[in-house]
Every structure is written in structure tokens, then in C-alpha cells.
View 1 (cartoon, rainbow, N blue to C red):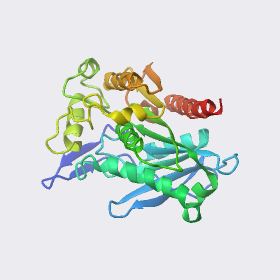
View 2: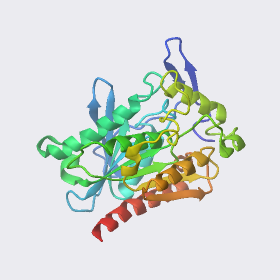
View 3: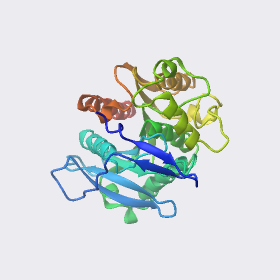
View 4: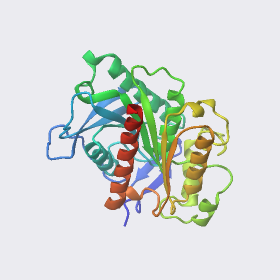
Length: 318
């Protein structure tokens, strides 16, 4: 039985959300070398209550300043979970140790207490924080100062985190990030929608992870008040955005048993038409968020992330 089975939410009269039965969280651990990756939390914006959990391979096995940076955004329909949620903590730790890489998981603000674009602003804050680490090495976090290769930065997100990574990449495309260089965007089963039901949404309306009723509710709670699902935050194909043409290479992943697969295909096709280099894995068996529940699927995710990140490096060496 998956850990989402007993998850329930209730909307309070003040517009906030009470979350019942959320999966357990994991503490950061910066001193246990038996773990695949060490981790610690650093403050991002105290006014917003945001922070970043940094994952460093326990045995970097590489030269100084050589680890790529992956800025990661967790899933949860914009309304649930945390960078400390055990499922995401384990996934980030695995990616950091296996690539190897520095993985920076962002604790962003949740809706409906903080509707979109609050999470997008937090993502941009995190990207600027990484840029500032590169600009000011004397006051930078020691892990980044010693191990980070700031010329190899990637944005990655799962589900709604994939949506956040995409919006963060659009803004990054028109932002001066020097000396930080954004090399790629990894969108794992990105969460998008629209007013018109797609074939996959209708066919899998009773899906056990993203049923249509829950999907509708999450968008209602996350989008700006009064916005329809044709808003660009929900439907990236609804509005022409020039910044999309400036995006670095994008990895887009999806599974045939995910109600969102048609949306993910639409996104990949839209990006390709704009001239963006897209690496797509959209024909594999599985359901939404399956890598959180099945180790073999988690291994596939890690391998595809590794191939994408290393492949970008190989292109630059040509």
C-alpha cells in the first residue's frame, strides 16, 4: 500500500489547509559517513520560512569544484509535503550519491496559504542564492565552496516540482546568473493541466495517485484566485512565452499509466517546436510518482538523470 493512501486534507474557514496523515520526514545528517549522502539545512528567506537541504555525497571521490549542482523541487500538487519528507529525502540522497552531484532541495511555500506564484518566487530566490554563493566564495557555504562546479547547474523537479522547475527556468532564461551557468532542466512527470480534459485524464479519472477530482482540487487551491486552468501557470501551451525559446536542454519524463502523460507529451512537443533540445522518456510503463515506491524505477530515474547530466558535459567538450 502506498504512503498516500491515508492522506487527507481539510480546508479551514480562514483559507488555510489542515493536512492529515502526511508521510514521515527525515532529519538532515551532516556527520554520518555510513549514509550515501550527507545533508544539512541552510536558511533561504527567513521572512518566507524557506530553506534549502543540501545533499553531498559521503565520498565525493572527485576533485575539488567538480560536482554539478542540481536544484531540486519536490512534488505534492503545490499543497503538500516538504523537502524533508522522507520519500524525497531518500530520492535526493540517492541522486547525489549516484551521479555524484550536489543536490539542493528547496523548501518552498505551499498553497493555498501561499498561492502561485509564491513557489515560483521561492525557486528564483534559491537560484539567486546559488549564484551568490559563486559570487562570494569567502562567505559561501563550505560544501559549495569546496565541491561545487558553478558552471554546471541544473534545475530538477518531480510532479508539481517539475512545473516549478519549468517556470524557474523560464525566468532564469532572462536573468543574469553569471558566474552561474544553467546547463539543463530535468522535468520528472511534470504537473500541468488545462480546461479541456485530455484522453489520458478521462481514461484514468479514478487513478489511485492523481484521480481527476483530486487533480481539480489541487489546481483550485494552487492557482491565483479567479484564474482558470488556461492560466500559463497551469497550461504552458496556452500562452506564447518568448523565454521558452532560450531554455537549455530539457529532459522530460512520463509514464503511460499517469493521467498527466498527455500533458507531458504536449510540453515536450511544444519545446521541440521552439527549437529546445528535448530528451524524452514518455513511453515507459508505470504510474505517477512510481519511483518513490519501487526501487527499480528509482534506479531508472537515477540512470536517466546521470545520462542527461553527463551527456550535457560531453556535448560541451566536443
